[in-house]
Every structure is written in structure tokens, then in C-alpha cells.
Image 1 (cartoon, rainbow, N blue to C red):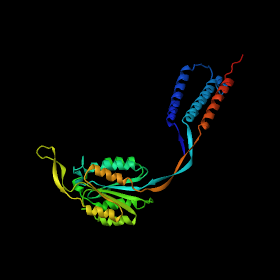
Image 2: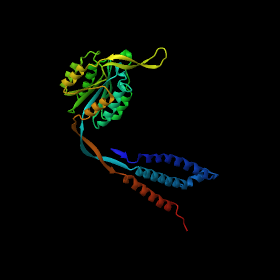
Image 3: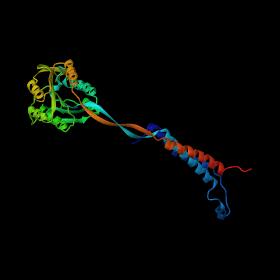
Image 4: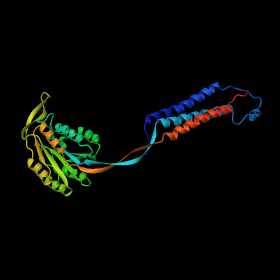
Length: 331
């Protein structure tokens, strides 16, 4: 692969057209005018006039500048390969964005607390491929498996609560989408991390059936139940004042289903009532066993700036000798 160590130096090439323009305008102003009585006199002038010689020499100077700029940019060729090994896990985060995630028993609410902890978890998983599925009444693939964690985190930051028209909790369908993204992975350890605060009430696929599908592809499901049971605060707008106020609604997490999902796939179920507990769960997940993979890197470089430096020197020396030969003064 051909590349430049200092590609910004190539910006200097933009001055070459300016030099050409300046030269022709300058030489035109200095050019004298001679009147001939007959055109036949012009035919006696040498084919290579003095001005043409000057133009030729100045052209050599521009070539010298061109080759010097290329040499200063340090062109090089990548040619050597090296092998290294990384320990990785393929992870699909499956995040509940149903209306119940607005509950403010976590600050600022359940969804935002889950996002913040998930962001820290992603940044801690160096070299792992991570993807993101969100779900409510339907499931949505937000990001396929990728090692570019900046992409995943940027997408995760933009995730918001679903609108009421598409509300619900389709856990089975969300798991199926995550399984579909992991099933062809060649990594030994394939994991789904499911975060939800409700029970399955939407979608065409039962969560337990989806868990059995996961076992067919050696996928482990870790489940996290987020939130308190009982009455929890929800934000609402006062119809009379227009101000935000809290109302309390009864909530119940289907812990039995979440526990069964993890048991069927040899994963673990965790339940948390606060932000600190959620952080501790992600810290525990960060200890997931990794699979060693081998990666080939190309890291050796062959410097070729001399290919351009030597012609520049040769042209500069030639320019000097040609000028002395053409314009030598006679005694």
C-alpha cells in the first residue's frame, strides 16, 4: 500500500500553478516589441529562441520543486505483515425502550441510567464486537456487531423512549433479532445482554422459545431486571398548570421469565433497584470469558522518498549546467 507520512506537505503543490501564472504575466510585461519590414526576416531566427530557452529552464525548476515536495511528504510502501492475538467476545445488547422505562425510581430515569452504565461497559470491552437491539412493541436493530465502539456508543446515546403508538414489550422478538446477528459468528463466546423492566406482552415469539433457539447456536443470555416492584414514580404534565409532576403507578417485573431465559442458556440473571446495583452488575459482566483470536497486521514500511529526491537533485544540477552552456558569456 502506498501512503505519505506527511500528506499535508502535498498542499505546497498548489503553489506550482500560481508560480506558472506569475511567471507568464511577469515575462509578458518585460517582453520588448520589434517591428519588421518583412516577415521573411523572422524565418531567419533560430527555432529555439532565447525566450524558449528561459521557459525550458524554468520548467526544469518547477519539476525540481515538484519532486522536492513529494520527497518531503515522505512516501512509503507498507509491505510486512505481523500476527497478534486478541481475546474477544461477541456481544449483543438488547435494551427495553418501552414506556415503562420512563419510571424515575432511577435517576434521571430507568432508560437513561441503563444507557449510562451500558456506555461504560462498552468502553471497557476492548477488541470485543458489540451490537445493539432496542425493543418495545417491536424490535429494532440499531447497530450490527462492530469493533468500532465509537459508532455503537454514539447510536446508544441517541436512543429514546418509544412513542405510545408502538409501545409494548416484545422480549421474544428482540432476542430473536439478537440471535440472528450472532448465529454465524465464529467466536466461541457469543452473548446477549438483555435489560428490561417488564413482562413479555407483544410480538409473535415466546421468550422461552427464543432462548431455546439461542442454545442451538451456543449463545448465552444474561438478563438484567431493572426497577422496583410496586408503586413507582412516573413523570406527567399537570393539565391545569402545564408543569411536570410525578404520579405513582403499579409496576411488576416478570422475574420468573428473565430467570428462566438465563437458566436455559447457562447465563445469569441479576436484579437491581438502584443505579449502584446496576453498575455492579455490569462490572460483573465485564468478567465474561473471552475467546482468543489471531489477527494479522501490516506494520513494516519501505521509505521511497529517495525515488523523488535524487531526480530533484539531478534536475537542479542539470539546470545549472544547461544555463551556463546556453548563456555563457564570450570574451
